[in-house]
Length: 290
Ligand code: G1P
Picture 1: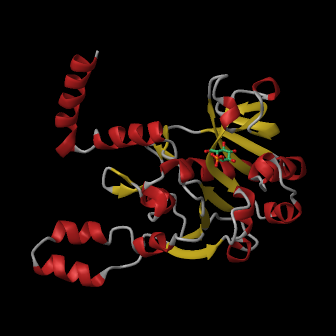
Picture 2 (picture 1 turned 60 degrees about the vertical axis):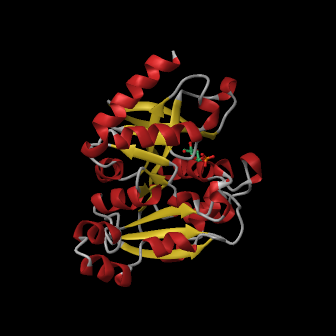
Picture 3 (picture 1 turned 120 degrees about the horizontal axis):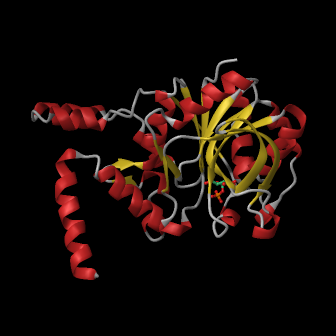
């Protein structure tokens, strides 16, 4: 069955970016000039998905506004001959259909996904976490849909990390089906290093079958007292099988201060009007700070 919808959880409190996130949703913090969530919605669109289900929460209405048309400002910019800005202004609207629902209380990622159950219905769907930006030639979600279509099982994106980092992620292990594709037999949310079954970390891109909703409805709180998506995925793996996929591309953790700065530099270096000046600046920093 075709993957037509994507859930984008956006209810998190964003405490890691206070005070910026006191009144601005963290999903709207820009990478250079574009909110992180716009990159996510663009990836969904490029993967051929038609509908995004935003799971928002208190203080997050600005996200929905961002994907709306702002016709007044567009008309004003056009009347001033600022056509490039007018195009940029509404670029994100109309890419996909945006539907939003609310998570009433922060009960975990698994619970956020469950909030979209009635909108998604009985079909496979994608989940994209806004903190994980993936810069790739073929959009990560498109790569994952291709793997889903080949194996007919749920798919989770994986990347290899160091011993030091594995406890910061969900962790998955399994037997290789082909290079970069694993038939998973273990999934654990943020294991202690001694208990980690591999060094494959779960990245925030998933293709899930609708069976996950049934499991999430019965899922008890796990790590941190929250309803964890990884715990429900581990059960789904036992019932239907689950594939792990080492995606191709560069991943940035935009939910972390250092990762956010890295993403800003990487995306700025792709902009011809900034690239040379930025490189010069970084060169001068290296010379003066070292
Ligand atoms: C979530 C998931 C975790 C995954 C991570 C990827 O954790 O629970 O399994 O590895 O996203 O970014 P969070 O970072 O929201 O704590």
